[in-house]
Image (cartoon, rainbow, N blue to C red; front, side):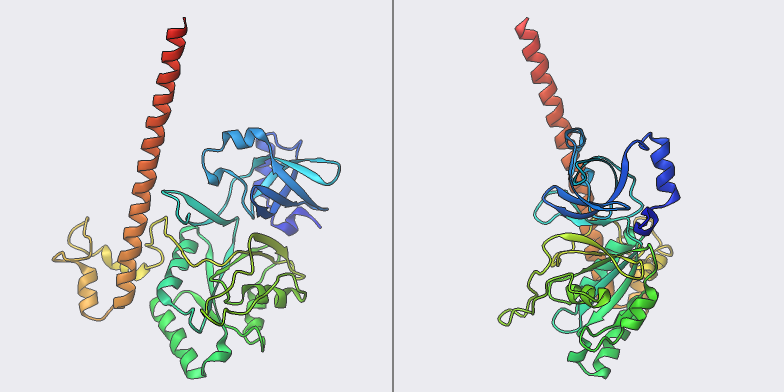
Length: 352
C-alpha cells in the first residue's frame, strides 16, 4: 500500500520537504485513546506516543494528534513509533467539549465527506440534524445525510421526513438506508471514492457500527441493540478509528454524540436566511424585533420555516457565547501568566 492510498497528497509532501521533515517517516493516526495512538504507514501499523517536546509545546487539546492527522514519526524496534510533528490539517470536525469551559473537542481531521446518520425512529430530529450540518459546513466538509432504520416506518412517512429535511436544506444529499435489507447501500457505494476520507457521525444506536461492518464485509465493529428501557442507543464505539475499505475509500468511525455544541458561525448551514439578512435595513440587525428586517418579513410571508429560523437564532447565540468564552479564557490565561512572571521576577530580585 502507498501513502496515497491513505490520502497522502502532493501538498503534504511539499510541506514535509519545506520544513525539513524528510528524515522522518510519515504516517496517519488511525486510533486515538487517552494519548496513546495507532499510526498507519505505507507498510504497517504501529503503537505510538508523542514526544515530550510536542507535549510541552501544546497549548490546548487541539495541539495533540487526532484521528485523521498526518504525522512525522520515528520508528523503534519495528513496533513502536514516536510522533514528532503534526502536519497542517485541511479540515477539522469539532464541537464544544462537553462540560469544559471554552474548549473544543476534535472529532476527526482531514475529512472530505461526512456521513451524518440519524435513525428514522425516536432519534429523528431536524434541529439536531442542523447542528451536525453546521459542524460539517463550518469545517468545509461535505455532508451526506443517511436516514437509517427505514424498515420501521411506512413509505409515506419516510417521504414526508425526507421532504421536511429537503425543504430546509435542498442542497444536501439525503440517502434512506436499511442495515437489514441493504436498501440505499448502492447509493452509498456510488459516493465512496478511492483515497477520500469519510467520517461517520451520529447518536448512539443509529447503526454506525453495523453500517461499517456491512460496507467492509467483515465484523470490524461490535454492535449492540437499543436499550429496551430507555430506547436510547448504547455506546458501542468508545474511541475514534480509521478503516480502509476494499474499494480504497477511508472511513473514520466515532463514538455516539448526544450533544453537538456549536463553535463556529452557522451562516452556510442556513444559507437562505443568510442571503435574506443582506437585505435587512440595519447592518447590526438581530433578526428578532427590528423594523426593516428582511428575515422577519420572509417569516411573516411563510417564505422561510419557523422552526429553522428559531434553530438558527439558538445556534447563533450558542456560537457567539462560545467565542466570548474563548476570549475570556485567553484573557484569564494571559493574566495568570503575567502574574507568574511577576512572582518569579520578585523572588529572583529578593534572592540577590
